[in-house]
Length: 285
Image (cartoon, rainbow, N blue to C red; front, top):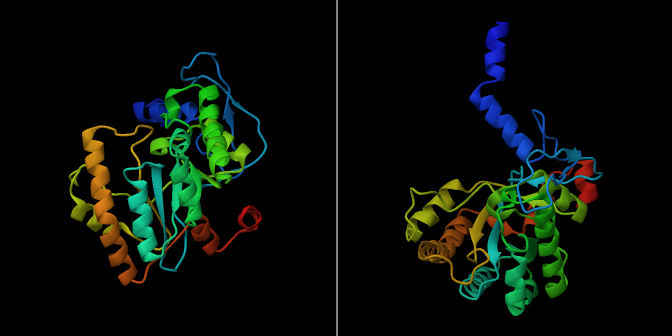
């Protein structure tokens, strides 16, 4: 039994899991994000991954939200990577036609390129979130760069729109301990998602397939992740543009079908506030 326990402890899967936890700066078997967020210290001053760093003590807390527990037919539409002149106006037009407010996770450099679109999104009554400054894959960079990406995105958005983002979303959802810590320091909770357009089983240009996937995955309290941009680029690669076009075409039919089923779309903060709040939740709301 002892030898079996040792083999399990040092199995490749266990080693990979411990390595992952160390990489994101969480350490140990579980991470209680709501109790304390930790910042990974930079081992090197160069722009490298500092996986060997220890988590440092930090006060505060942040929440990571994939969906909300509710019996109501409520869901939050969220859009990443804007503002982009090719897609953001079309999303705003579709939402306005349905009388829906959504949450837009802006990339700082895109907001700087297109300040009028960022301001128009706010003026239309939509919620603004922080999607970093340059849309870098955070786990590939040092703690210093990660902190700058999170805080820099928030600062850029605030400087242009006057809005301090309530939420942070990491590019591709790839979180690190440093990103969690920086979000906590900024007072931003972390938004993930429970519904997406679908994987490789849905062709890039299959808007009907995207709409079906969204509709079949929809559930009370869902956070839906779509896009109104192409990362930190203006045009992106051809396949990515094709995927975005499919999302644009699917959006109207998905909303129409969902509302016919009794669903109502709200901002992310409204969705979270609709759930039964614990004392901590009520304090942060």
